[in-house]
Image (cartoon, rainbow, N blue to C red):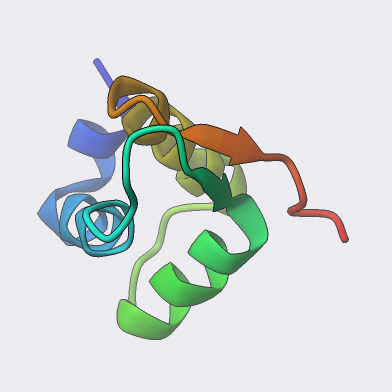
Amino acid sequence: MSIVRRVGPVLDQAIAAILNRADHGDIVSIKAALNHIRHSAPDLVASNDELIEAIIEAATALGLTVASDADE
């Protein structure tokens, strides 16, 4: 089962809001995506590791490149 499904529709919607703005082949910043998700859904209980995995899974399914900049 994917992380997106385990943590629920709030995460799915937050990730979709970010990734739907990107074009095929764009680069998605993990750090920016995490910040956006935490701001958009402050009550989300998923860990950063769960969020990162869900972002990567969704982004790659859409043909986007992921920048591993979460620790910067």
